[in-house]
Amino acid sequence: MAKELSQKALNVSESTTLAISAKAKALKAAGKHVINLSVGEPDFDTPSHIKAAATKAVEAGFTKYTESSGTLSLREAVCEKLKKDNGLEYSPAQIVVSNGAKHSLANIFAAILNPGDEVIIPAPYWLSYPEMIKLAGGECRFVHAGAADRYKVTPALLASVLSDKTKAIVLNSPSNPTGMVYSKAALEAVAKFAVEHDLYVISDEIYETLIYDGNKHVSIASFGKEIYDRTIVVNGFSKAFAMTGWRIGYTASSLQLAKVMGNIQSHQTSNPCSIAQKAAEEALRGSQDCIAEMRDEFNKRREYMYEKLSKVPGMNLLKPQGAFYLFIDVSMLVGKQYNGTAIGNANDLAMLLLEEDNVATVPCADFGFPNHIRISYSTDMADIKTGIERIEKFVQKINVH
Image 1 (cartoon, rainbow, N blue to C red):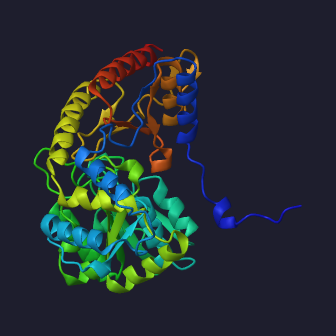
Image 2 (cartoon, rainbow, N blue to C red):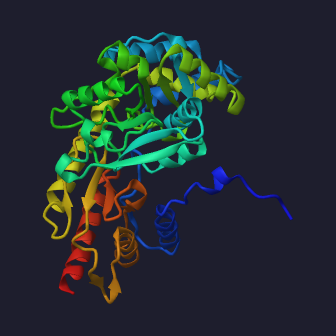
Image 3 (cartoon, helix red, strand yellow):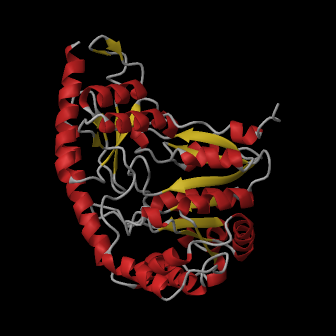
């Protein structure tokens, strides 16, 4: 008989969205026209100048190991970007390039957490944060901010879960799944709290280029040396440059922490993909026109989806300020029935919507809000229009019962 598996690994939860994903694939295989509004990646192709840089790298034989924390030229380009866009001064030695922002987050938690250390996670949250923290031996402390707070935490809320074991706060702005953006004043308040209690801030800024209605992205690391020293900025190329499959992300942090994360990465992955690094360098130093073009298209879809779905009875939502998601409260539909089938939570609703009307959405129990769903507008307008028509008809049938 084989010996038992790792308890840390066994404690990692299976995503409730996997059942939705598997069902959607099965329906597609059966020939159904499934409208997928669950995707978390841009539907645009990677811009041609970025692809050309990768091709050039291959043809030049740039296919060997690189420095474990990324090539010097890419880390320099990241420093240039952080100074130009965020007003942050970093040296290349403070940058660790990884195999995607998710890998960067895993590096962070492995580097800062000891068994029993607690990390405050504002809910709603991206579903992978808790699992990565658990794998690193940490404990999660969730603090919920509802629609009245525009799903954003305050120092008072953070204080409610603070303990002598608290090590860090995770901050995601613009947010997945809510699309909310923290204002400068709100960030300053969180920064002051983190400094007062000597906490790390993991600032996930992967959606920073996707902001609408005149809102501005501000990095929490920009409010002085004390918070700068405690902040680990996380970013990447997946959302801004439609490079999800290239798997390149990065962190900017203190020299000490960057060295530790670089050491961890050197043993786990050796280095990020050499070819993808050349593509990422071109993304930062080449034309930035693609960012505005994608953002403008996302904004058109956002406006359309919000205008339509905000009028659907039983669906309550705030207009997102960034990213490409709508976070919808469906609690008014919970407890009702659809063709004799009880709707016990958002997961039941999402599965029924998929089975009956072939629209895939994300139920948000794994995001800390079991009576909410997330809908993405990172798909083409034709599918968005069809998907919303199906949702409207689906909800009308619920309201009949």
